[in-house]
Each structure stands twice: as structure tokens, then as C-alpha cells.
Image 1 (tube, rainbow, N blue to C red):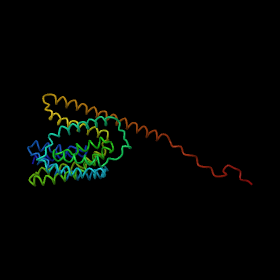
Image 2 (cartoon, one colour):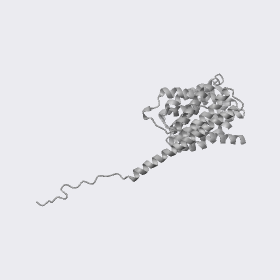
Image 3 (cartoon, rainbow, N blue to C red):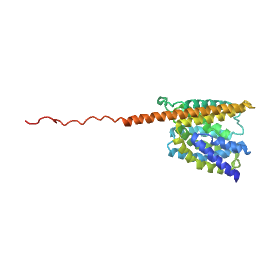
Image 4 (cartoon, rainbow, N blue to C red):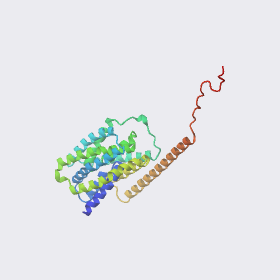
Length: 317
């Protein structure tokens, strides 16, 4: 019971992070299950079954708070479901170990770009146009496959790619990714059911993760609405950089004191980016307040009422 309570708290924390940053539920939950000795396929299967409930609650909450772009959801969810189903079905035969360093390098680069981009004033480009299906389709396919085979990865792959595009505001990126993950989790669970059978799902763990995630889902959707995009982007970038740096160092057999030094340097860079983001945010708010004050202090000049025809003239015949 104590272990299940801890798992429920982890599910709550994982959903709080996932709902506000658009990633890390599967990564956090799967890591815990692997640490306690659960087989990789069973861990991924249990996490995805729990995600059916948590992503449904998260998607509903994001929709209520206006964080969802349904056009993006439609174009990324179906390819994501296909990729997740394939990854879950062939998990025992297909390994992502050889591709993990390359994927981590790409995500690390995207995360570093986000840190730089969101530590400076945001400049929207209305001429950039809308996200196209030829971009969303392959992205969903890859993200779904990585998510099913790795026990998590839908958010870490899809969220930074959509943020880097600059065509959708961060809160709608996160809301759309979380909402489409419901379809991905359902497809992955179906694939695991076919490949592992019902014994592949650890029901007590599924219920514990689900309970914690359902509590956190509406809170996370509310947080992503009020947290400024400047801070949100910098926070997401730091999570991506630190997470994938660990994968890269493991792939390169980096040991000794070097990993500690790398983590310290990356953490210092993250803190610097967050500090710059806060400064930019404060400066932007001051400029807006000043502009609003000037608008209020300068009364609009209204034209004098027109004088009636013949007014002021002597009307005597």
C-alpha cells in the first residue's frame, strides 16, 4: 500500500509537469516502474493504460481553458496513433537503443534553441502561416513510435518541434499535444494488449498512476493558461536539454566527474536563460503599463458639436 501511495504521488507530480509543460508523464512514471523492477514492456503498457484516463482529463481541462487547437490535434493524433500501435506491437522485436543517441542529439539541439529563443523578447511572425499536415503527420508518426517503445516520448518529441516552429503559442502547443495524446495512449494500449495480453498490464499500478494524474490534470491546465509564455518556453527548453544530455552521456560512456561538470554547466545555462526570460517579461510588462498609462492620461480629442444652421445670425427679415 505504501508503494502504491508513492506511485500515486508520482503520477500526480508527473501529470502536473506534463499538463503544464506538455511532456514528462511517461518518462517520469516509466522511470519509477523500471527502478522497482518492472519489465520494460509491462512498464510502458501500464503507463499507457493509465494515460488513457489522465490524457482524457487533461484534454478536457485544456479544452475548457481554451488551450487546444483542434486542427493540430486532428492532424497529429491519427499518425501518432499509428506510430504508437506499431511501436507497442513490435516492442520485443524492435529496439530504439541504436537510434536513441541520434534522437537525443536532435532534441538536445531543439531544447538549446528554445532556451535561446525564450530568453529574448518574443517576436511573432504572422506571415509564417499555419502548421501543415506534411509536417504534423511525420512528426506524429515518429513521436508515437518513440512514445510506445520508450515508455514515454510523445511530449518530448512533439512539444519542442511545435514550439520551435513558432506558429502556435506555447499554451496551445501544450494543450494540443496533451489532448492528442489520448488517441496515442489508446492505440498503444491496444497494441500492448495484442502483444502481451491482459497479464502485461499491472492493474494496481495503473489505478495508482491514474488516481494521481486525475487530481493534477485540471490544475496543470489552469497553470499553463496563467504562466507566461516567456517562462514556459525557457522551462521546457531546460527540461529537454537536461533530459537528453543524460542519454547522450550514457551513449558515449562518459563517466567519472565529467557528467557532474556537464550537469552543472547545463544547469547554470538553464538558470541564466530563466533569469533573462524573467527580465524580458518584466521589461515587456513595464512597457505595456507605460503605454496604457499614456493612453489613459491623454484624453481623446473629440470634435466640437456642429453649430445649428443659422445659429448666431440675425434672423430678422
